Structure formats: structure tokens, C-alpha cells
Image (cartoon, rainbow, N blue to C red; front, side, top):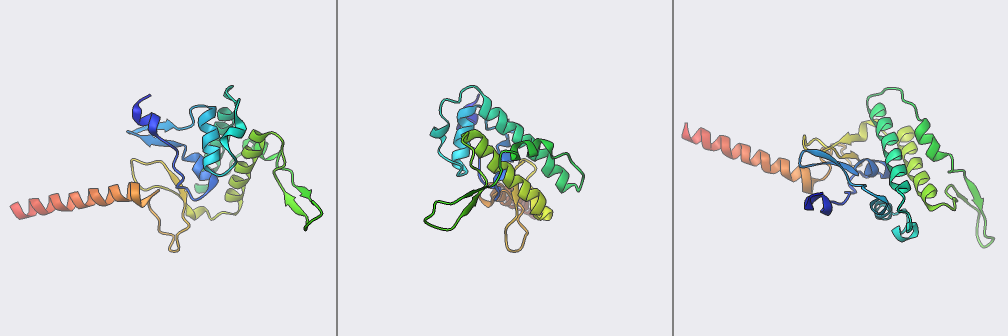
Length: 198
């Protein structure tokens, strides 16, 4: 592992939980890299996206968490691709992660009842069910035209375009957008230099 790979952290630029999971695989120095290398990385990512403290998942060093998270990511990836291409797809792998998300009515007596979907005692199952549910909502209720891939040829990141004009092109203006601006500036400058010499 290079020092660059060791310093990489998943970027939360997708504006949707399911897309942020897809973005844990990204292009680094021209090659696709998986930023979820082990259970520790997976637990940190779950904490980063707000699904509970990583230390609640301590003791998971058997690879189960990262394997399950990757399986969920692969399922979401294939379904998002099919949705964007308006093709049929088999949701059974995603549905397997949704099965534990059975709604339960919780009522403590002090206030009104609350419908809670994720009451699993197993922290891994609960967290993966929450991601699967977010993905299912995106696929069933989201606007497919707003599911986008960054326009940079060197980037594989996905995002849900929530901008007012729905004209977002880059995963991030600070990253790919800025690189594009710099490249265009250099191109204009080089063309201007050639024009003035001619």
C-alpha cells in the first residue's frame, strides 16, 4: 500500500447515503481502489456517515463487516446502473439486507408512539439495513435523472444532484471542478500563446 492509499479517506460527496457507499470505491492514480480494506475501515465509514460510533463495533476483526458492506455496495451499484440505464434488475440481494428492517411500534408512555424500522440488536445488521433502506428509497422514489457520475474522466464518484438548477457536473467543485477549470485555463493560455506566435 502506498502512502497515498494509506492517507485516503472515503469522500462524502454523493448527497445520499447509498451513493456515498458506492463512492468508497474510487479512481486513485488511474486505478480503482477500495477504501474499505477491513472491518476497522468499514466501522469508521459507518460512523462517518452517522450510523453510530465505530467503537460500538469493536471486536469485529473476522472480516464479516467489510464483507457484508461490500456485498451491499455491489448490490446497490448494479441496481443503480440498471436504474440509470432504464433496465430491469434483480433486487434480491438488496432485499436480503432489507428483511431485518421490520417496522416496530415503540411507545414509552410519555409521548406519542413512534414507528421505528431498525430495532435490531445486532449493530451490523441494523446499520446495513439502514443503508439498504436508503438505497431502496432512492431506487424506487428518487429521480433517476438526478443520479449522476462526475463528468471528470479521471473520477468515478456518483452523486444525487440536489442543486436548484440540477446542472451539477462534478463530484466536488473543490476537486474535479477546480481541476477542470485549471485544465481549461491552461488550454486557453497555450492556444493564446500559439495564436500570438502565428
